[in-house]
Length: 166
Image 1: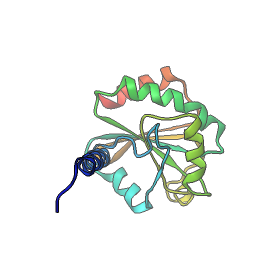
Image 2 (image 1 turned 60 degrees about the vertical axis):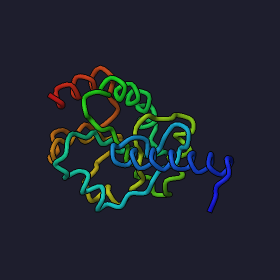
Image 3 (image 1 turned 90 degrees about the vertical axis):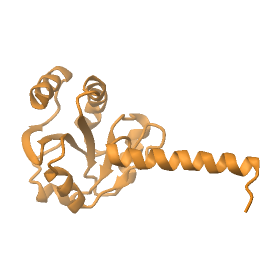
């Protein structure tokens, strides 16, 4: 089968997009990007595997569309992602909205983030004993090192993260 010049361009474009998507899954970048606002669903088993993985360090940010403090922290987290971009720390947002990923997608249309966001749903509230949100879990090599509840300032989180990644 022969592909014309126009077909070849489309094939190249979709191939590049596919490679970028696969790379983003492997390196933890932009499951929800500023341009798409699409949030992927994540099963609790996958979240549990992410939390117990002995591969590196992660900051999990538990959030919901209805939570004013959560939305207020998004710009702070974007700054922190930029600040610690070369540290190997993965920032991952976890939406616990009962109504599905659409609620958080609408929030991210107005306040885009530069880290991955997944929807797990409200079932993790009991499973992880989340007593409130926003909630941050700091995980290193499969072990929870720190748990930070509530709205926090950039300065406070910057110090906690710097101590965490050392």
